[in-house]
Image (cartoon, rainbow, N blue to C red; front, top):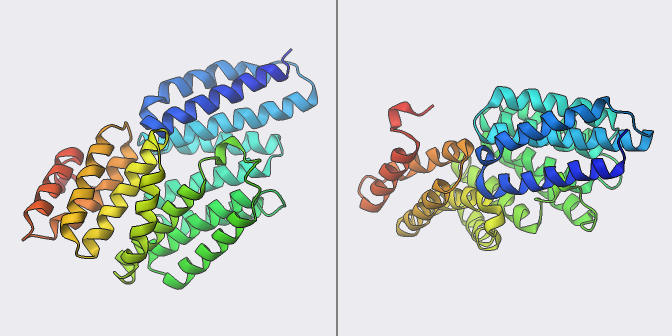
Length: 310
C-alpha cells in the first residue's frame, strides 16, 4: 500500500534530478534518473487509493519525461524516444493534459535538433491540442515558441513571427503562480532566450538584420540566467556569438564565442556540443580575422575536426 507521501517523495526526487540536468547537463544525472525509475516502478504494482494512483501515474510520467530529456541531452536519441513514449502512456493514465503537452514539446525538440522540421511541427501541434484548456497557457506558450523556432529554421519568416506573437500572448495570459515543475524553466528569461533564438535563425535563413533584434534579447537572457541554468546560459551564449558574427561585429562575436566554449566545457551535454558546431562554422568563414579562426579551431578541438561533423 502506498500513500500520498510516497508520491510526494518521488516528485521531489524528480525535481532535484531535473535541477542537476539544468545545472550540469544530462550525462551528470543519467544513471541516477535510471536508478530512480527502477526503484519507482515497483510502486505501480502496489495498491493505492484512486486519487493517489492518478497522482502516481503523473509523477511516474514526469520521471520518464525527465529521463527522455536527459537521454536526449546525452545524445541517446533512441532511448529518449522510448522514455517519452512511456511518459505519454503514464500521463494519459493520469489524465494530465499539461504533462502530455510538455512531453510533446520535448519530442518536438528532439526532432528539431535533428532537423526533422515537419515532424517537430506535428509534435508541437499535438501538444497544443492537449494544452487547449484553461490553465494550460504556459504549455501553449512553450509550444508556440518552439513552433516559431522551427519555422525560422525552415526560413518561413512570416509564420515564425506569427507564432512568436501567439506565444507571447499565451505567456502574458498565464497564471505564473501555479506552474507544474516540468514547465517552471519557462520564465521571462527563457522567453527572451527563445525569441532571441528565433531571430537568430531568421538571421541565418531569411535576413541577417534579424541578428540586431536577437542580440539584446540574448544578452539579457545571458545576464539573467544563473548557475542553476548553466546549460541554458551556454546555449544562449552560442546564439549570441553567432548573431554578433552575422552582424559583422567580429571582435565582440569572438569574445562571446570563447565565453560560450568555456561554458560548454563545464557541462556534460552532447546537445550543447552539437549546438556549438554551427558557431565554429560561422567563425571559420571569416578567414581574415585571426580571432575568428582561433575560435573556430578551439570549437573544432572541442567537438571534433570539421571532417568528422555530422
